[in-house]
Amino acid sequence: MIANLVLQTYATDEAEKLVDELVSLYLEVHADEGEFYSEERYLRQLGAHRERNGWQLVTATVNGVLIAYIYGFPLPPQTRWWEGLNGDVPAGFTDEDGRRTFAISELLVRAGWRRKGVARALHDRLLSGRTEQRATLLVRPDNAIARRAYDSWGWRQQARLRPSWENAPEFLVLTTDLPHPTASSTVRACE
Image: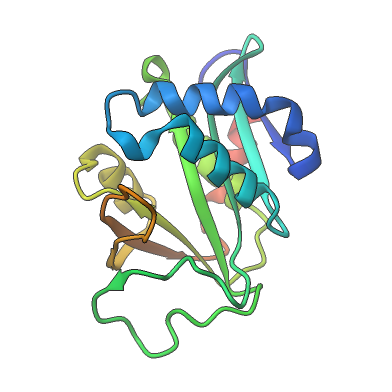
């Protein structure tokens, strides 16, 4: 693992001071990927997500510099997460009660720090100790590197989804059962 890597977990109020850094890293990672990845849209998304009950952020820093982060939240009963779902899913797949599904919304790693285990460490830290039955995330079909990583971490594709947001791309819907089987061993290795 990377020397001087520090993983830190934040709740909504604690993360307020990091918003500018989170947005800056988001814009850096998604530079030149189109209008959907605008600062204005992401500020709205991040603000709305931070208001969710159970929202949690995990950051990765090296020598005090933010190099990566991940965040997510439990899906509430009247979630819009599944709107735009395309594909055959089992009956009840989209039923939520606030305790069934934890949604990972963002996992971002600065270019120079990719393929060094940072994304996996963040992923496992965020999912460790979760009490939900499953987790879900959305990944673009053209993001082959992320898809290979998620596949190797035990995620399965369930369907496709095109959100109703302006300029939104189509995503693959992935799920994994919780508790995540390797979370505790990876987290301990990073501490």
